[in-house]
Length: 351
Image (cartoon, rainbow, N blue to C red; front, side, top):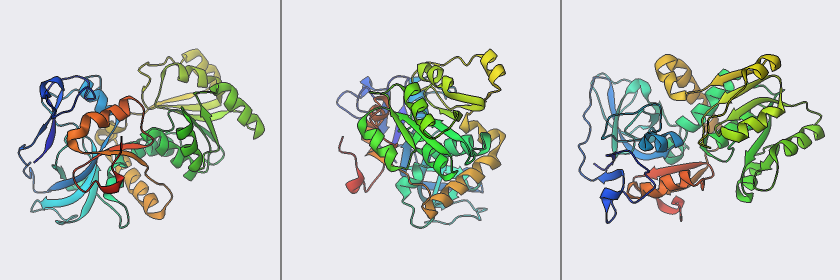
């Protein structure tokens, strides 16, 4: 089978994994990698149709993620495909079923093996490439907003990095919850896209000051401030937007795409009665697996009912993985970046 191997730590966007000089890249495409065997009676082998690129995958290959697997390893987390083989005790799925899931490693390959308890059936009418984009990005935002912040229709949600994978998920989930949603992004194309999702107000960082723009909007709606800050960016933007938070507001720490970890002053947190939630979504599988399972099932039902849509910005083949990572690194993507293994068709990125 084909698999993308990380042989050493480095920037996966630097050069093609099977180019003229493969030694220049930390990743390489293995064309004859062993197909994984079923490793338990309840194991299921899935033929991967598509797999998602997340910022965490990029950081892991760089060696800057909190989990550092031994080299070499196959990166990748969320994916979708069809069941290829099942163990003798599997009761939930049969060969040919359409499924999606996520793993700590291994989805950047033609086949992956997981226990049946970790797989989810993909509803009819849901495209497999779209289903592969759902678990991590939408799962992160759903657990953060629904399970941690308990977002309600009476609240104001401010989403930083709103045009990225988790950001696009967050603004849609915010609208499903009935909240007033304010999105922050950079560039006219991203602003127009966010408006098309029904966002109540969009701040374009390329030509607007975030605090002034949000304050003007809040005043026009007779709103006091922001109740929930969804922050996958960090850095100076976190410090700036904390000025907009209400008494009793909640801060969701999702990640640090800016590369800078912000300081949230404990004295102001005390005086303002803020709640700060750290959200490492992947650790829920160990500590609260039922929350993850309920979350993904609800999200799949929302897709089936048309309450949320999964926007895919770029689709690449495995041999173009460096270009896929470049789309994330250079913030070219609006929504999700994907790797698909066949039938790319008209959806394939032209970049």
